[in-house]
Image 1 (cartoon, one colour):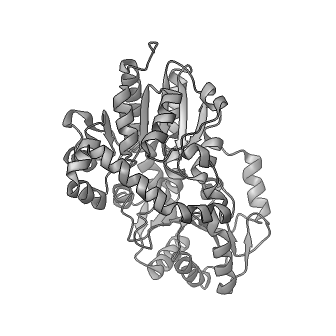
Image 2 (tube, one colour):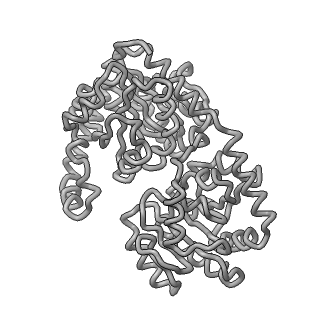
Image 3 (cartoon, helix red, strand yellow):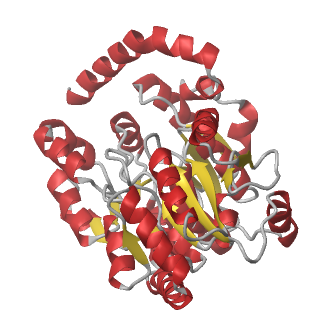
Length: 435
């Protein structure tokens, strides 16, 4: 009965918001992409491509989750090439990232259906998966219920529950205990996440602490030619001190620019590369940079300037690789929670982040305790820490080495995730052949 009420309220919400989304579809491309798939209508060739006796449906909402689960997808395919992978995302950038980074590993890529009972039923019955895997904090009641009815295990990998979400789950426990009770495995990042999951309704026997799969980051190898193309286009020289501000959000670019101006007064060889988190904000940040008075170029156009607007998709990791220091956005402003600190750390770069980093708090703690990263409270702290690192090569190198060691010391969660999925796959009702 509680799921029926949820479904009714969800339908009412979709109908109420329909005029808004119709307007958005005409004005923004991202709202048009995958619209039929979001309502459960999948092309026959995609269904055929992913058909097989052992199909795993993996869902990652956007770019960060897609990159995080990549080592798991690779591990599953390496251990059993016969396994089929259906991969879904919510965002267009996530979809594009999956198409690029997981090319040759996934058998079908779709946009995740709206959690309407009839839409999820269409997709579930079309593909008939043997296991459903969702990443981090994606909770979809009707998908979970449909999987339960079909006898398909529901697995949450890299599971994390924020303080705010935890309070909401407990406040509406009459509903969420039913939802979380369906979960076959909650593979938690931390012991704290595991405890929160149990309090939310996951059976204690089904909640395990496996660690954070993001430490198993293994970005696609950048070809030397592509890397050199970027450097040559932006006139990057060995004497440049490159500060990268990655995954920035509204309200952060202004702070980053102010900090950079302060850095420039002491370090004339400093350059700044700003990479907004969302592509639709490229024009907005372009306008902001024009107002700043700083000379800048867009990566897509090339040329030399002290500031570069990285207005391309999929190149941030490569830019981190030749950075001097890196600031990770979503953390100088509240409500975002921050982004993956391990991307620059993977390349042995000192990492900076703001005071509002909550989603990656445990990761930040490890980096800070080991000297690989630093919290900066505002633009003034950001400027001072950047100047200190640029002035002290030994400090910068120690921090970079420490950051990389943190990544290496915490690997292993991806393999545990692969083994867990395989265990459930052997026992799924929808698996028609043994592994």
